[in-house]
Amino acid sequence: MTGWLWSFGDGGSSTEPNPVYQYNAAGNYTVGLVAYGPDGQDRAVVENAVHVLGPVGAISVTSNLGEASFRITGPGGTVLTGAGMSSGYVDRPAGSYTITWNPQTGYVAPPSQTFELTDGGSVAFDGTYAQLPGPDTTPPTVLSAVPANGSGNAEVQAIRLRISEQVRVTSGALIVQNQDGVVFSPAEVAIESESDGTIELVAGFTVALPDGYYSARLRDTVLDMQDNALDGDANGTEGGDFVLRFSVRPVRGDLNCDGEVNFDDINPFVTALVSREGYESRYPGCAWLNADCNDDGSVDFDDINPFVKCLVHSGCP
Ligand SMILES: [Ca+2]
Ligand SMILES: [Ca+2]
Ligand SMILES: [Ca+2]
Ligand SMILES: [Ca+2]
Image (cartoon, rainbow, N blue to C red; front, side, top):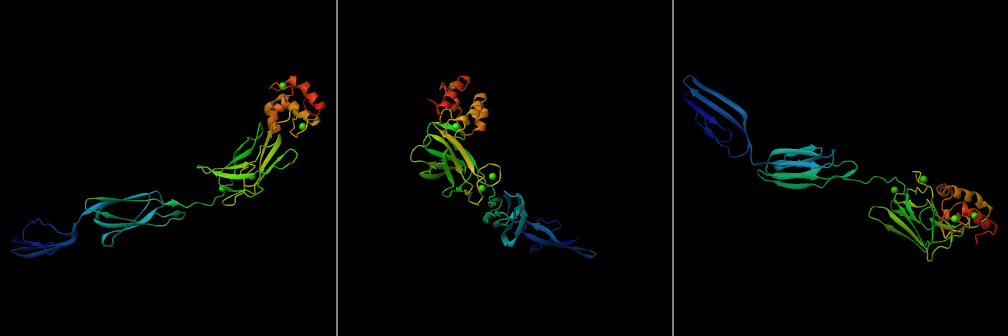
């Protein structure tokens, strides 16, 4: 060979046999070579032989959703698409990149974001899909009550019911009555919301409830915000009143909680004598200590004769 002519695809050329050439701009270049010798010339052309990278950086994409997918537009209209919770791109030309998240059923897509990628730098897109609330199919339930179900109380001026979620309470939904069917209407029914999402329904009376045996019934006309009816009977399906039984200053000798002391109290008295637990489960709301007819703080066989006296006198002396 006696001569060489290189063309580098960007207008540059060289006649060196083994030239070193520096490109000034990123791109794909076609390199050609014409070699001369005593017998003529040879020509070789290699298209896209050189890929010159410009200033580059890295892009990472993260999201909170496996089904996530996105589209990134970059300098010169380049488009990157991807999916999943994590993607990465290297050697991306510097410039402005904008991500657009595709919609996913049941979610609010993250907002679009734009970042400037600098040479040697990196940008990180992070998108959070927010789940749309699904329909509420869970009925509200009563979690606890004050006074407690089955308790005897010195004084009751308010009934407090802890309910699992926000509800709409219509008038007449809470009915409080004593053993004679006398209805006690609360002066005020207030709802107090707690940070854990539960609420407390407070029925306050202007004066303490008179002595007696009570039932407080919260009817299943109480609805949550999606119209699911109260599961007051706690059987897991909506509907069913919640019933609370308690007593105020119970009447000694009245073991069946009807406000009177008579022969109907004999069987429950025997039950109370045998087992407090058995009595309280059999007569919820009744006070076990009503069987303490000699007033010594316990229920035992010493109460039998005093109980008989109470029976005879239709009430303990
Ligand atoms: Ca609900
Ligand atoms: Ca139910
Ligand atoms: Ca009775
Ligand atoms: Ca006793």
